[in-house]
Amino acid sequence: MTTDKDWNVIYSYTRAQAIEDGVLIDITADAQAHGFKVHTVVTDNLYHQYVEVPTGLDGSFGQSSAGRLHDVLVLALFAARSSKGTDRVYFKVSFLMGPGRSETVDIIAHIGPGDNAEPVLTLMLPEDD
Image 1 (cartoon, rainbow, N blue to C red):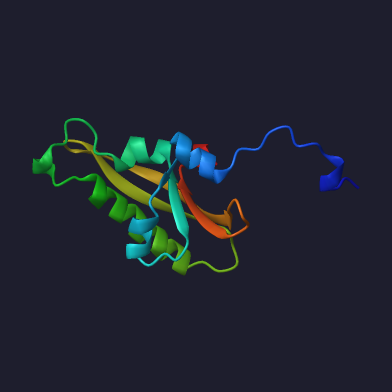
Image 2 (tube, one colour):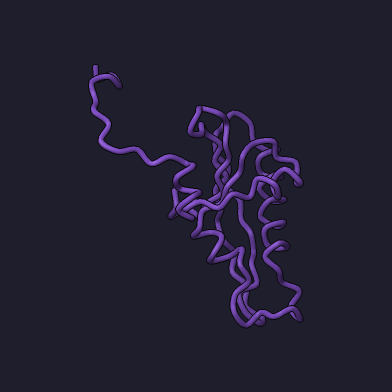
């Protein structure tokens, strides 16, 4: 049987480094305002593709990054509360992507250990997993 001490770590990439690099985006304050109790991030892919308002959807469409993030967090909270005994939940969010054009997106909420083994939450697209 192989144990951790049998391996030489060549390189490790921490959650803190991923946040610093912009690969993960810290949304903890927003998440806490919605009832989450742990450090929370979204992947840059999810944020830039769907949370940020697409070009062409000005204020007359009622879209804002804050509102779109609110939708993600509320649906993540509903999914988390309805599941037991798992470290991840799957849910769908519909985003307005252009005038008259919406896209329903599968999102994963995963809770796992952070850099110091504390519980942390990551919201991501399936291809980010």
